[in-house]
Image 1 (cartoon, rainbow, N blue to C red):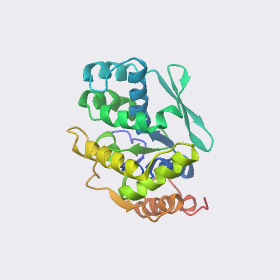
Image 2 (image 1 turned 180 degrees about the vertical axis):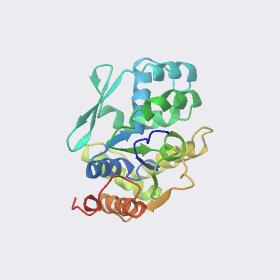
Image 3 (image 1 turned 135 degrees about the vertical axis):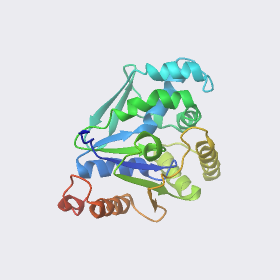
Image 4 (image 1 turned 90 degrees about the vertical axis):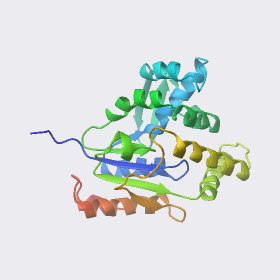
Length: 239
């Protein structure tokens, strides 16, 4: 008999759709593990910068990915602390510069192959909520529930603009919209693991929804599927 694997919920979508915050909150509600797959590519992009490796040097990036010295340290009520080569890089990897570089290196087939197994080891009891762009199509194609989040570039840019202003960073809405469109194009047109919903994914447009409302919609889908070791009481708890 093939042993039962731990359940997985995948939440994919483009940058700014809210998948990171939604995934983290959902994992907390379920008491499950959480994988921010995009962080791995951001960490790799930062490591490439630290070691003067060009973002188009696929062979060197593959080696760097295979030996990436990174740790994810869980924190209560917050994203994990991310440590690269002994340095806390939790905030650094969230910059626009690193985000754009991560999108470039993520398009390289050898890089994606090198990081695939590292992502799959996050599948631990009692279950995993995995956030990314190819979680439901490539990394966890057997996931019990696959969600694909949508939002217009304008809405996503407004969200990002608000975040950057809170950090004291000045940027124009027009520039953010253009950067998002370029990143979307690169993610959607890459030859390996392009950004797209899995055939059996449930799409949710987040344009006019709060994070809590999106999480509630996903919890409703879990309750409908009845394929998870989660009680209905948890699905109706207040956030």
